[in-house]
Image (cartoon, rainbow, N blue to C red; front, top):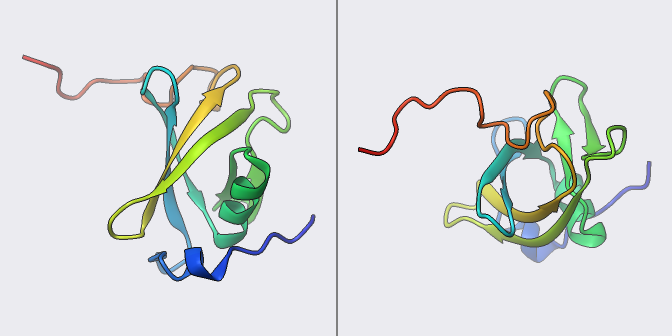
Length: 117
């Protein structure tokens, strides 16, 4: 796997957890719906920025993975923003197919804990 290196100016803005990861919230670029949450290491963020594909870090497998590489449900990344604390990035994507590994459009389809009044 090719090594991607994050621009030092971007890397300096990040506040990583103890595992060297930042949270990535993924939102549909058209509807604004939150599709999923995943983790990124510096290399995953660097690859995402360079290729405009959603690339994440699997904590269970201990490696990067490209969204849709096996399922075909790819993400074209339109923008990436860093939050004020530097510990989360927001990806705005064009999603092809399901975003969730269980086959649903969003990973937030399972239960509503509190709805609108």
